[in-house]
Image (cartoon, rainbow, N blue to C red; front, side, top):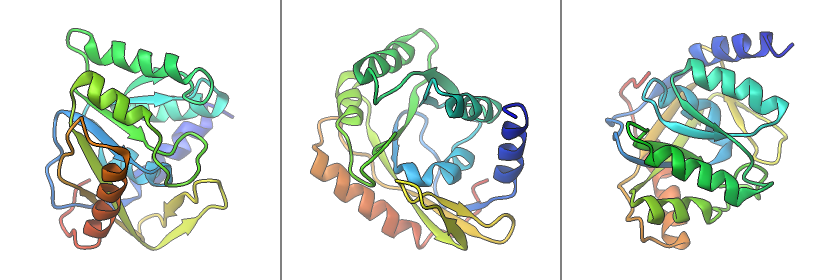
Length: 196
């Protein structure tokens, strides 16, 4: 079953229509909400961005999909031994020739929904990286009854728009990050150029 799930996931992601007007920065932390992971997985693919994925069975499926999409992967849990997971990310980012960009679901892995946790801010300060808030707007999507209210755009028919807000300083606080996330979502409503 695990062998089939990544193929189905990749086929689904290939069917998505995603639009944006922006060039994706090469360096920094892309901050997003857990509910927007499917769209962001496609929108930011093939750029060698580092992502943290669970060591669970579901995490194994996600790791196979993300690996095929060109992401660099660190396995671990931010809910169990969160400090160890953040340290693993820190080590991977500091390696010679290591990634310069990192994707973080601010409210993952288990919520509460759209409430940012402090790990991203700690990494930004420690690694001296800007934070890029990511907003997504959906036209035509299913909303799952999961803790994050994840949205799955309709294959081929639905359109998702992605916006990357202005970079935040590594020294920003959690309230500035929350406001920037809201601004990025509102900005996503106006994007119109195909991203991927």
